[in-house]
Amino acid sequence: MARKLERKPSSKLSTSDRILQSAEKLFSERGIDGVSLREITSDSGVNSAALHYHFGSKIAVLEKIFERRAKPIAERRMQLLSELKYNRQGRPGVEDVLRAFLRPALESQGTPDGDSFRLLRARLAFERETVRRRVLDNAFNPSSQKALSELAKALPHLDAKELQWRFHFLLGSMVYTMARPGRIESLSEDQVDTSDWESALERLVKFASAGFHAP
Image (cartoon, rainbow, N blue to C red):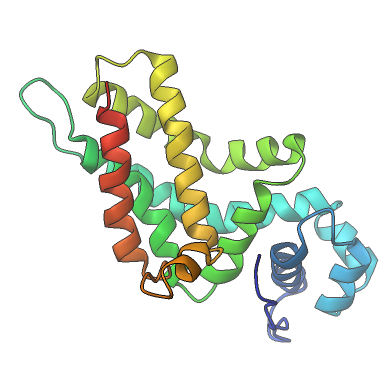
């Protein structure tokens, strides 16, 4: 699914940061279960005692990575969602809600560390449910619940279950877009470039909006 990321931890980083940088790279390449603690310590140039001292387990390392990478995304979402404008009926625009929710995740791909986290986020979709839910719930539940709340205001005719199903499809579209597997590039003979996150954002907002507005 992804090319191998050739980035070694900087010797200027702290021990914990070196562990996190190596783990993020390795997890994004092979998934959580495909990486051992020994490989993380070897790649980061630290001993196993240091890893256990700072984190204790592989899942704790993963949670810390998500805490660091997801926090700016979640905070940006909450900020944009709090700035929504409402009409006289107290309803925000559906596209405005979608853009506020999607933009922070997609624009993060343009940051220096965005590539490895983008791949890791996509990999996590295929991990064990207990791992997925533990990590993603902590990282994104508050901002996702806020988005759902705003969509409920914008679309009062949809019951909660229907809205949740449509949000489920939105999440799938977002993660697949972030994963950039290259399928549409192949099918379009490279006429479509999904690495253009701004173009992807506007198209995904239009596409998802039609789905949320469907009868």
